[in-house]
Image 1 (cartoon, protein in one colour):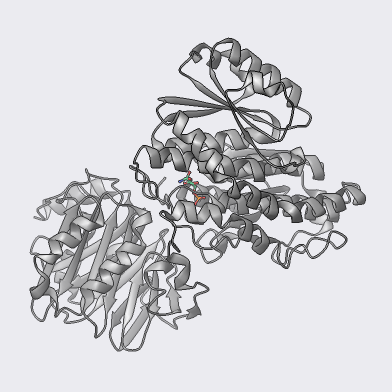
Image 2 (spheres, helix red, strand yellow; image 1 turned 135 degrees about the vertical axis):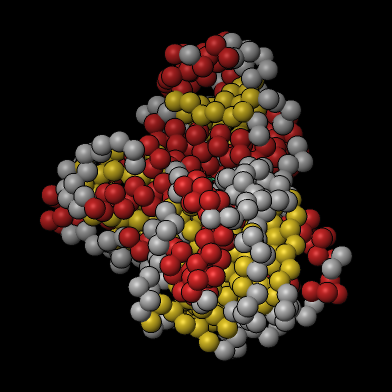
Length: 614
Ligand code: AGP
């Protein structure tokens, strides 16, 4: 949450900063700001709300700022202090000579604020960031060296931070550092780009350096000096970024979310490529380092994740338990980290995260690593902090996901769990070979089935139109599709703000049924298989309470026409694979409802794509 950018070089800086912030808008959009450096002056511009508001502010100053070649910028998801202009970054020290942008949370900010106030610093905002500005400035007044001041200051900071700092005494210098928050430096010819994430630099350069925790880099157009927390000079490790700028375009779709939903057949083909050659050959997971002995010795698996990734994990539990004969627990990372977990060297801990940046999941992974567990990470960002903790890795290769509501990354995570379950079953010999072969055949057919659903999007649009005026929405399912119900409901609530909830259908009669009346839509995920008849009964119970019944089904059963007011049909599919197919109409339903309601689909209120605070 929050995105920071910086530039030092020979080009006009404002457009570079604004473009970078635009690419990072998925990280937060409460307010934004930039600071630019002229020969003898530092100027700060800020605006509340979306980035467009900052652009409007800058239009009024375009002449005076056009010459600036060094600057920093920030896009905010508010943690400390309301999303006002005053609390927007960049923040300055008391004399205004030092400016700073920050991503993260400084946990000991109260103590530091008291200490600095006693020393005479005057605080103007409610943010934790402002203390970093005052702290670095007060040390700078003593040591007269910006890099050294930053190095000494971060020793006093607890928590998570990525910082980019400028000082009026330096003509064209940025000093950057980080701990438990992402930061990379893009390397050009006589220019450097600083950013929280790749999209902000990729159109300028593919060469970059990722800072490790507590490293500090001083950047001028002609030089980069990297040091560690003890002041030792380090050799920068330069990497080639594996991203293409084209991935960031909407490619003619109205929203990134719709584009990303439509990419899903190819996302599946992509992840299967190289891992599943033919049904007769074993699954290949190059970066998974689990041998037969390690697998045999395991006594449990714990899967930890948040939000949509948690729903993929729930389906993952079902798959691993079905094929691998091992007990699996799934838990929200935020719950896992503040209790005593029974985790040891015989536990396989699987962290699932689109971004690889989610603070709760990173903490959970680090805790279990310290207890000796093997760590397997399933992520869309193999370059992330979480991936760096991994003993084993499954990169899901979904491509960059811009819409805050996760869609294609969910599907890619689901497919990863099928691959992992089949892979472990093959190594352990826990499932009949012929059955595994037929499973692999079915897995390869999934992209075509999703294409059929995408081709019938109009039917889902029709459903969206009929039900978009509702205040509440209930999704029911059983078995492996409980994950689908929860994920479908999450999609709807996060982009339309309708109070949507997913329930295990059998639980309806234990309380939620009290809410049902003729105003309540109940969407039943009715897939032929071991719970079909049970779910049908649960749907009858809801119908008897006059609920507005919708079915999402692969059944051709005529009697469904009497029970349901609206039926969304999906292709023939085995129950075990149905979560992959059934979620797609629910993503589309959420999308079209939000569209009808005129909501900001790609950037829903109060949310951010990467949740880097606990
Ligand atoms: C998904 O639509 C959400 N915006 C959110 O729940 C997300 O899945 C969650 O924050 C976890 O993120 P991660 O997968 O990057 O760890």
